[in-house]
Length: 261
Image (tube, rainbow, N blue to C red; front, side, top):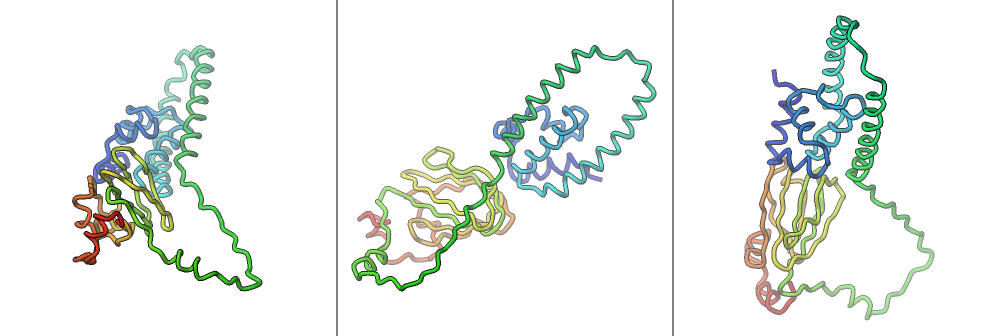
């Protein structure tokens, strides 16, 4: 039967994510992450920190926290029963000097506060609630303003404008001209927009979890729901290959040259 640590390792490898990457983003020591995947939870600091490390690991991979943490608690209870028997057998051992315990406690408190701050930063921020006022009297909009609103936004010929609407829980990374602009888990209803002058590079943990447009044109699906797709490169040269329409409008090339895309 596959252990908890083995299952977590398999899920990570399916997403093409390395332990070094998780360690760099979550600031959890690499040896603690290796201990989790090796079911060696006794190598972790213990108590609150074990769950904090595991929760940060699960958040980064986009896994179900509730189910996996429940499995971890069952596993840890069995481990504690076994450890309790060992301690009962070794009661005659020499006790550690109290100062060592105090120093260890201070160290773990500092580390714990750091991870609480990190988990707060990683947690998706709630969307602001917009309260709409009741319109008492109709507002007459001048014809000039209506015409301006109907005008389509134009884009310079050396830009790629990307707009994303998320429809499923999705882990995503977006690099814009080599700079990381989006990294983490997005939820249904979330949106993202960026403009590149040279290249967009996208990595996805759920290829079917979003809809997108490129310079106002609807884009093709990157893959099915749940599929992991990496190294999606979009440039001015291959932009048309990602558009959903088999044959973009005749004005596409003209707009590209004149700066309307």
